Length: 383
Image (cartoon, rainbow, N blue to C red):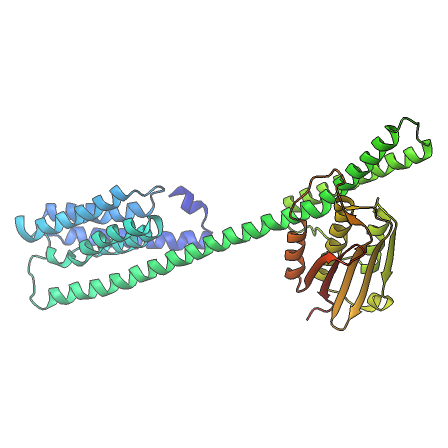
């Protein structure tokens, strides 16, 4: 009860207090209207238990079954063994409690268990008019029918709430899965790119120092400087990822001009020389942020794959041009598929295809006869 009140606003607490006061007053009136003390005690006990179960943190099937069985037992006693316990009321407060408890039962328990418990509670609720001392041949069946119709409506409402809750849970799980995939792509695209560069340059240093001749200090210093820069970039990417995980409002990929983005990636590439060919007309386009983000990942993944999977590469070309309502960005190299001593496999192209398609584009990757090409078609406008 305290946990429920803590989550309510002040006006919700006021409404809740008024409802509790009205319910308590109704219960007192019903108990006072009973012609005997036995009937008063039965009305109070059978009325309080369903309402108390509504605010129980861990509701059990045994408790629900016990409440239903107790209500039915009291009805049987009033109708047969000790007639005359009730005269003016059959337990309206209890009826409301049983209806609300049926809704919570639908929300808490599994389908088959909820169906059995709701059937028990429904039977207890529809037989409440049988407690009256003076049964009317027409009025009592009419009251039973009305209670059954109202209870059926309440159960339909509870079933709708159950389906809505299930749908919301499924949506939450799907959103979590999509978020995990997004983080997996970001870790691969940003961190793996720099780590691959570190591994490749480390292999170059080991090859240069393992040949038996001391390498040129300037060349060795350049190699170590490349490793240092790649490590710093990997740490920066990791910090960016951590910032995004801590604060959803922090953008992971700032909107960046396409030409500047291509230039930055080409400059930081540690493999073969990179040539860029960006159509000047692209600079005048107001590209969507999703397009620029997807283009960055395309270039970065393609350059990473050159380091991982290509040998004898003498030239890498990054080109971007406008094709009507689409932007075509392509990364080609003239190397051959080979073993660079790096781990094979992974989900690079799979994740890249998903990212490009989520931006409204398409991706193709394959041999060109003189190397390998990765090409993406992306929308060049918000439409």
